[in-house]
Image (cartoon, rainbow over all chains, first blue to last red; front, side, top):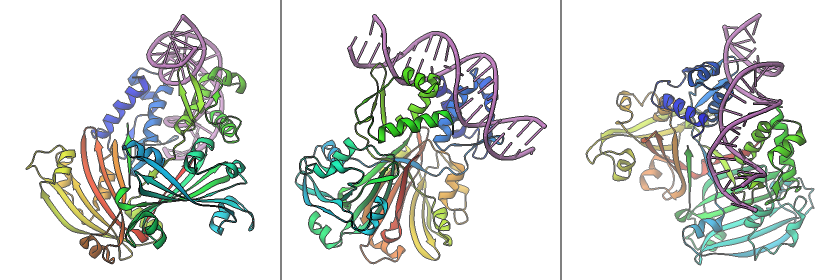
Length: 231
Length: 231
DNA sequence: AAGTGGTCTAGACCACGGA
DNA sequence: CCGTGGTCTAGACCACTTC
C-alpha cells in the first residue's frame, strides 16, 4: 500500500475511534509530515482523500478539522438496463414503441437550446427482462448536438447503449422520485392501475449543450437502486 | 485556475468535441508533459481527475484511453431532513413515536453482529414540514458500538442529527425504492391507502461495526432526490 | 502580518502487466 | 522485458484568510 494510503488509514482511525471528534482541529501538514516521516505533499494527498470523503474540512490559515456534519454522500450508479438484467441472469430485449422527429415540448426545448419549431428526435422504448416489461424509456435526443443520431437504427442498438458508447458527457442531472403509474404506463408495464413506479429523469450535457433527456419508468416491485460508499 | 485544472479542461475538451473518441488512446504522460510545458506529476493530477470522473481509463504499460462505457455516476446526497425543510423555508419539527431497547429483528441483528437476545435501541420518529408529516424514520442504533446513545434524549435532538454530529462513518450502503404505503405508514403520513411512497434504507458502518440502520419513508408527491454531477 | 493549505518542479524509484 | 503509470522527495512560491 502506498504511503499516503497508510497515512490516510491512520488518520481515519483517529477520527473513527474518537481520538479526534467532530469539530476537533487536526495538526497542520508540516506537523503531520514530521510525525510520519514524509514530505508535505504526501500528507496533502492523504488529507485530500479525507476531504473528498467528507470526513475533514480544511481552510487556509484556519487549518483542518474533523467535519461536523457529514451528510451521507454516495456514488449513485444508475445501471445500463441491459447490464442490470443480464447481470442477474435474465434475458434482455427491447422494443421501439415510437420514433419521431418533431419539435419537443418547452421543457425539453429549453435545455436543448432550440427555437420553437426546431425538431429533435423522440424515441419511446420498452425494455424487457426475460419477456416481462421492465422499464419504459422516453427519450429526447438533441439533433443539433448529435446529428448522427438521425441515422442510427435504435431497434438494433438501444438508445441508451448508443449514447453511452458514442457520447461522453461532462455534466448530468438526475431526479429520482416515486409516483403512481399513469394509465399508459400501467398498460405498457402490465401493472394494475395507479401502481407505484420508480421514476428517473436524467439530462446530460456535453459542454454547454444538452445532448439528451430521458425519463425512465420502472415498476416499484422490481426496481431498487443500491449505493455503496467508502474505502 | 491551477495548471492541472487548465490542462484537465483542455483534455476534457478534446474528449467532448470528438478529437479523442471513446476507445481512443491518449498520449502518455511524458508526451503531454512536454506538450503543456509542465512536469509529469502535474499531468498525472489532471488525468486522475478525469479517471475519477469516469471519462478516462488507465492501465500501466497499456496507457490511457477515453472510457468506452461511461455509466452515469453521480454523487447522491441524501439531505438531513431538517436542512432540507428549512432550506426551502419550511418550519421543521419532529416527534418521537416510540423508543425501546429490545432485541432487533434478524436482518438488523446480522449487520450489528449481535447475539440473539442482545438488545439495541429502536426509535421511530415522525418529521414534519410546517406541521405536515414529511418523513417516517424507523431507526435501530447499535448500543454495542454507540453506548452513549442510551442516554440521549431524542425528543430534543433528532437521532439523525445526533448521529451526524457524533458518529463519523466510513462506509454506507443505501437502497432506494418505491412502494405503496402500508396502513400504518399511510396513517402517519396522512396519505390515502396504498399511496406511493419513496423509501430509503441506509446502513452505516464505522470500521467493522455497523452503527445504525434506518428506514425513511417519504410521500411520493413531496419527495425528490436531485443529483448533479460534473465540474 | 503571518500561518496554513494549494500547487508546482525536477528528478527519481518502482510496480504492474502487456508485448 | 521494458514502457507506462503510481508515487515520493526536497524544496519552493503563492493564495487565501484569519489573527
